[in-house]
Image (tube, rainbow, N blue to C red; front, top):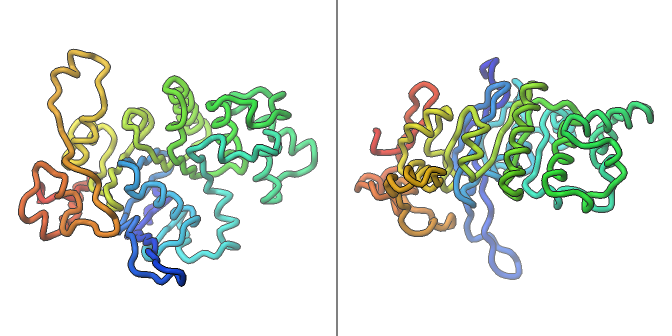
Length: 325
C-alpha cells in the first residue's frame, strides 16, 4: 500500500442471496458489488457516482465493515481489515466515521442533540469528566455552525440542514481520518446542499479529513471532488480526476450521465447534443453478458455482447470499454 493512500479496496465482491419458499432455500444471488477496486489518497475527496441501485452505498458500507463481503481486500491506514472481527473493528472505527443520507432517520428522536453528538465519546470511553465532555460537545457544535444552547433541543426542532450539521458533528467527535458520506446532501434543498457541501470542504481543509463521497448529483460531485469513479451494475466503468472526467469523459455511460446535467445558460443548453441511455437498468439477478452496459449503449459492438472489457489504466485514469481497447 502506498504511504499516500489511506484506503485501498481490491476486487471487492458483495453478493446478496435470493431465497424462495418457507424454508428460504437459496436459489441464486445478486452481485451488488462485482470486483470493485479503488484507492483514496490522504486528504482528498473520492466520489462514487451512478444511478440508484448501482452498488455505491453497498460499497461504502462494506468499506466500514458494516456489510459482509464475499471476496476482496480492504486495507485502511496500512492495516488489512478484511477479516477483522467486530471487536477488532471497534478501535478502527474511531478513525472511520459515516454521515448518512437521511439526517432525521439517523438521529434518535428521544435524545437531545448534545447527547447525540457526545454518544461516540461515551461509547468509546473518551468522554472524560463532565466538564471535558460538555466542553467537547460545545466545541463540535461551534465547528459545524450550531449554537451552544441548541444542545438541549431535540432533532425534530431543527431544519434538515441543521440536522445534517448535527450528524457531521457526531462524525467528528472521535477525530476521524476518513469520513464516508453516503449521499449527505441529496435529501436537502438546493441552497442548503451548497451550504453543507461548503462546510464539508472547509472541515477538510481545517482538519485534514479524507472523504469517500457517495452521490448521484453530478453538480455536487463536481464541486467537492478530487477524483471520481462512475459505477454501473456493481462495477466501476470509468475513474479519473475530476477535471478530466468532466471535461473529457470516455465511457458512453459517463457521457450520458454528464449530458443529463442541465446547463444554467439557456443558450448553452440549447446547443448541447443529447446522449440518451436506451431502455431500463437490467436486473442484477440476470445481468447482461459481456459488457453489462451494452443493452443500453448506442455505441455497442458485437464484441460487447460476448466479452467484458478489460480495465485499462493510464496513469490515474481507469476505463472499461471496448471502444478504447
